[in-house]
Every structure is written in structure tokens, then in C-alpha cells.
Length: 394
Image 1 (cartoon, one colour):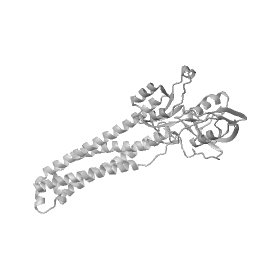
Image 2: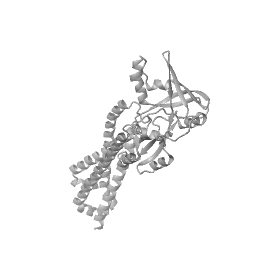
Image 3: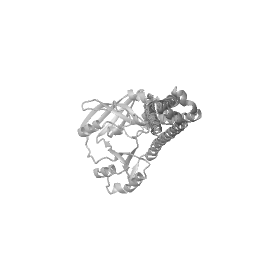
Image 4: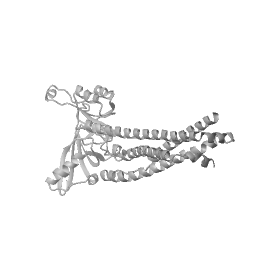
């Protein structure tokens, strides 16, 4: 009966405007959170093309420097100086094999053999699945990660010129390499298995544990220090990076700075989208409060009479509170439904672009939506209760 009395001045147009505005804000926020969660494996999983912002740093090599005996290796002091820069998150060193390595593989009656080199970096910088990236002394199999462009060179260059079959990553993973290591007057035969391909590191990688063991056992050359470093930066668009590298005479491989700037730009865009969604949601919250306040103002006389005849402020506030909670619930359900439809569309596109990408669930969007619903509803109910309380006090 109280609701029938109080709803007479209800403006359907105003409430519809609130629902529409809040729905737009809710969808933008939930879509941003869900999309970021769905594409996060593209940035973080093994073989990611944008896992983090990394640069491969080396010293500039010149003929004059070689003649004068200048080393291209980094000293410990130089590594510490680089790591202490404000744009640096961490610095890792490449460790090179100090022994001779050769590898052989049989294919269609042909025996292919070549001299190789191994390098290693700390495991955290390896952009491939680390499940098989282990080595213990006594193990006879060496996990190896190759640059993906090596496979492309073989498939589209060497294989076609020699009428050899092209090989996929899966087939390469099943093949065994005959690895021969020699140094300090000793020779060791082992098997090598390709466990992944890297887009970031243009070298033949082995686990750090293997490199430490092999250099200690067969290394016959002095360790002059790392000639290349892998640098993780917090913002690749920071102009201090290029300035520092130029001052020190350091170089970076490929277009690492450009790729890092693209990563940073994409993350910034996601943040802007979420901010816009939150702003729209806040504005819609004020639209609803203005509508409710206007409705309460029109019903001031009726509310006063209800309070005078014995109804409590909580009882009088309840119809308006239920109205706002119901509208917020409608926005939440509608927002999640729209997000699910849009998500189905872009997951199909992502699945074709990244076949290994596994679709997750909608829990990020659901949890975010429930938190927004609860927060906005509590604020709405408190504001209504305060307004009715002021009428009762007046």
C-alpha cells in the first residue's frame, strides 16, 4: 500500500535514462576486465609475442676497439649501473658455452651435422613453457629452445632448395639431436630435444643449470663475462632508455624498443577504457540519486504524513531502496548478458589468431559486476535513508 501511494510521481523516463547510462558504464567496465583477462595469456604464456617489455643489450663492436683490445663483455659494475636505472626492473646475463659443441641429425638418408654454440639466461626470461625446462647432472637429455626464425629459415629456404620436407614445431619437438661436447681433453655424447621456440631470444638456449654444469666440466676458455644482457623495463616509451644506451654506446637487437612501446600503448588504452567506464558508471549513479531525490521531494508531504502516523524512516525508505536495488540488479544481469555475447564473438577471432590460446571463464566480469552492484546499491540505500531521515527530523 505504501508503494502504491509513493509511486504516483515516479518518472519512467528518468529511471530509463539511469538504466541506460548505468548499463553503458557497466558493460564498458566488465568488457574491459573480461577482455584483459582473456587476452592475458597472449602476453604472459610461453611463446608470447608480448610477454613483458624486454630489451637485449650489447656493446657496440668496432674495429678500432678490437685492435686496442677493448672487451665487448659487461663488467659487474656496468650491470649494477644498468639495473639501478629508474627505467630498469631487472637485468639478466647471457652465459655462453666455453666448450666446443656440434649437433647431428639424420633425415631421409642424409646426415646433417654442424658446429653449434649454446647460451643460457635465467629461467624467468625464457618465453616458452618451462615444464620441460629442467636439467640435473647425470641427465642424458638436454632441453633446447631455438629461435623461431631458425625454423622459418629451414622450412622456406634450406628445405625447399634441397627438396626436403618442411617441419612443424610439433614434429621438431619429437626429433632427437646428437649433441657432441668437447673440452679439457674430454668428449661427451648427449641427446638434445627441442622443447620450444622463442620469438624474443635469437640464440640457441639451454637451461642455466646445464650451462653451469657443462662449463665447469668441459669449459676450456676463460670466462670474460657476459657479452649480452637482457633488460626488463617498466615503460619502453621512457626516453631515458634511448638516452642512456646512446651515452654508454650500448645497442639493442632488432626493434625491441618499438615492440615495447606498442605493448605499453596497448596497456594504456585498456586503462583508459576502464577509466571511461567507471566515469560513466559514477555519472549514472548521480542520475539515479537525482531522480530519487526529485521523487522524494515531490512526495515530501506524503512521507511526512506516513512518519507522523507511526511509520519508521526505515519502513518509509524501503520502497525506494528496493527500487534502486532492483534497477541495479537489472543493469548487472543485462551487462553480463551483453558481455557474454560480445565475448563469444572475439574469442572466435582470438582462437584463429592464437590456436594455443585457451578460453577462460567469466568469473572476472562476474566478480567485478557483483562488487560494483554491491557498492552502488549500498551507497544508494544509505543516501535514501539519509534523505528520509532529514525529512523526519524536519
